[in-house]
Length: 325
Ligand code: BTN
Image (cartoon, rainbow, N blue to C red; front, side, top):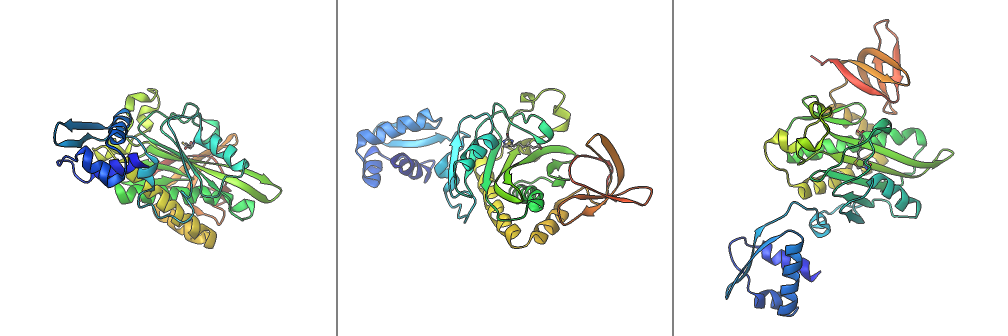
């Protein structure tokens, strides 16, 4: 807590020096403790210049996520009530599922700087080096099970809106919940659920966003298919600000979802690039081609086939054959 107070004071100016005495007086700790906290900030990666007879100032801020920075000005009602931040974990989804089964509160968020066993949709891996965002949110909605897929669409709406609000890039959703920039994936969502009969015990919404990682941290075969926000925006992105905006958008859209799922579906349609395109959707051993007409009230993709019949697809991989006009 004192360390955070000292950091907040130092952040007030990048040019002025704060004397040890001033920092001690304003935070209510001894000068020796101020010095210890400064050393600890340096160990966290901060560059701090100590100028004899003048004091301290920050010369460099590391690109790390910090609990206090995330919470600053967050003001969410449900999402982010509790935040658990880890330097590394196998999968934030796995961890969040464990925490949920042990009773963690709705809105608890689990974040990691890197994942060693990140999970993607359809049993795939999610390569998770440092520099990106990996988070999972525990939710306990009182809804019938067939509405659960809309939660993932809701997540895609929230993440897309957050990216649009903060980064100067053209993101859109590809059904069901891939977030793309010019046909290259920049974010994905994976929902896992624990349920009994038709009741959801808890659900974990996992989000991965490729933000600042180096392209060569990916295997060569993935590189043409994946991009990062930094590469597209042409500048490094502040991950803390983006994370905070994602949590705010999730908080707002989750409450909208509980109130009226139709609002979420309507927003998803505004932000998506699939509807109106000619697509091929593969899954469950078959590939189906046709015109993506829309999504139904359960979030399934409605495909109009060339023979005039329609199919409602619940899961699969979409390839855009011809974009909408
Ligand atoms: C996809 O295949 O598009 C879904 C990717 C979901 C990745 C995120 S990263 C945070 C959370 N933890 C995981 O293991 N997976 C999700």
